[in-house]
Length: 159
Ligand code: 4NP
Image (cartoon, rainbow, N blue to C red; front, side, top):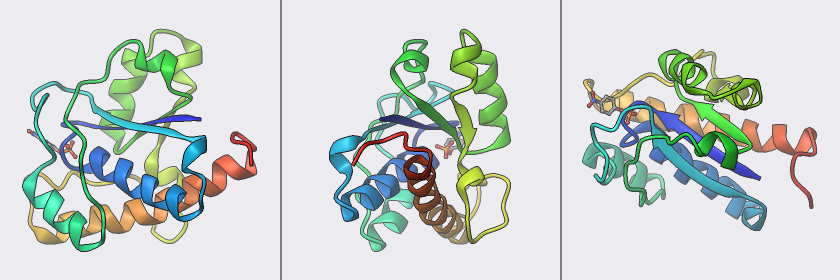
């Protein structure tokens, strides 16, 4: 199963989602069943490493952010089975970019899979302080566990 995590800049939230979800599936021994990637709805930070603040918060929890920022491409709507938006603006932008109904139906929101928190989006941490980066990781750990449960329950991946 191919899963693409998407935020605005692809330097904070979606690289973290990619690393957290990779951690979840690795822990469960299911990493061979997934292809996981991330992208941004804008190209402003294309080619850059993840934000240094996000990296330092993530590494404290054992997540190494290795992705290089890239903008989502039209072919991503074909390659990926599930396109996971971090916030409502990303969700709207992706819906607008989707080439057809099939592609539109692949777009979901990260917090749809949240089990412990009551947030309707993963808030943008870029202009805020340390607490915002911690909140991103809290929401992603919760939602990524929920996402794996969802794909297993829906039998979207094999054994
Ligand atoms: P991200 O965070 O969408 O989680 O990667 C942001 C990164 C950069 C900007 C905004 C949000 N920016 O305005 O440059």
